[in-house]
Structures are given as C-alpha cells and as structure tokens.
Image 1 (cartoon, helix red, strand yellow):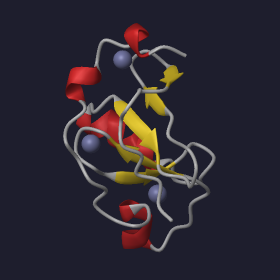
Image 2: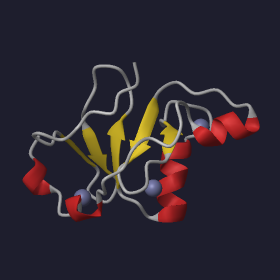
Image 3: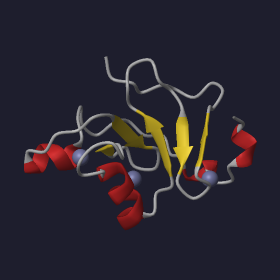
Image 4: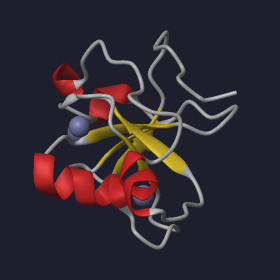
Length: 97
Ligand SMILES: [Zn+2]
Ligand SMILES: [Zn+2]
Ligand SMILES: [Zn+2]
C-alpha cells in the first residue's frame, strides 16, 4: 500500500463531503451498504456491494478516479484507474461519525 504507485493524486482536490449519505440513493430512495467519497468533487456514493453502485457510476460518468472510504474508522483511498487501494499519509479522514 503505497501512494507513490498512483499517479492521479493531483486530481484530489480540497473537498468536503457534499452529503451525509449516498446523494444518488437519497434522490431515488435507494439503500446503500457502504459509502465512498469522491476526492475530486466531494460526491458521496455507495460502494460496489450496494445495489446501485453509485460511487463507480460517478467515476464512469465524471471520470474522477479517486475515492476515499466514508466509513467510520476507515481512511483508505482507492484509484479506479489503477485499481489500487492505498493510504495517504497526513490526508484528512472524512469518515462520518
Ligand atoms: Zn491512480
Ligand atoms: Zn447510491
Ligand atoms: Zn467526483
């Protein structure tokens, strides 16, 4: 798990989560299992174990490659383009309470 393996960290912005839950599920009344936050724009989407997989859908439509877990106690990042999970030293954790 090394940040140096991902070359897309420059696409991570100074973002804050835009919602407390998956904003797409909230709009359609869907349910989610785990939440992921886009590090380019702050979009909060649901994981691939969720029925609607909005985090992956967000990557597909917006091409924002980096997400961070939005689950309590988790601060790992994931890059869709590299298919790589890693940790970023000193990065803020946005896990909701
Ligand atoms: Zn990458
Ligand atoms: Zn969702
Ligand atoms: Zn995004």
